[in-house]
Image (spheres, protein in one colour):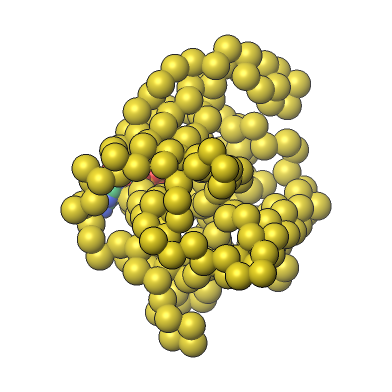
Length: 206
Ligand SMILES: CC(C)(COP(=O)(O)OP(=O)(O)OC[C@H]1O[C@@H](n2cnc3c(N)ncnc32)[C@H](O)[C@@H]1OP(=O)(O)O)[C@@H](O)C(=O)NCCC(=O)NCCS
């Protein structure tokens, strides 16, 4: 197991997810992220605040700051023909001491229904379990976000319970489901889609 941390800095690898790749976010991704997030269908069942350019910028800055501090964070999901970001996927919290990580993701509506996020999550999970001493990945999903719940179940997560009034989303309280995937659960799905999750060597284009 390789803990890829040197002097605080954690270099987010580019990872092949079959027809697309995960790559580090950049400051010039702000317009692309804003463009897909501003579609209300992307945020309506989430705890995102009101979407603005400043929010898109904050997402990127938070990701860059976390990786630079040695904390795993979100990747951008990019399509090879133009390297544009069509979604993000990765970790919004990560406890090295307690060996758990919180997963989060969002995708442009134009890309829904193709299995792209399942491949992105599979790759992020493989990286977390294979390169780091993480024993549990968890995700919090509004109980009315059925599409996200289906996705997590397809990725092998178990619904562990309901957190009542867990978050206020744009002024209203919502119950959230908590989903968990243990290292031992992930082992059971290791043989699925072995072509997903290869780290792209630096300097190689996909
Ligand atoms: C949650 C979200 C990422 C799910 O996206 P998605 O496209 O449904 O997820 P996937 O990439 O796994 O695609 C699965 C769908 O593609 C279909 N599909 C088509 N080809 C496929 C393939 N080759 N492999 C897998 N699934 C495929 C599946 O049947 C499935 O459709 P279904 O759910 O209607 O049965 C997306 O709806 C989203 O961004 N929502 C807004 C943000 C959000 O809710 N984030 C999560 C907060 S907790």
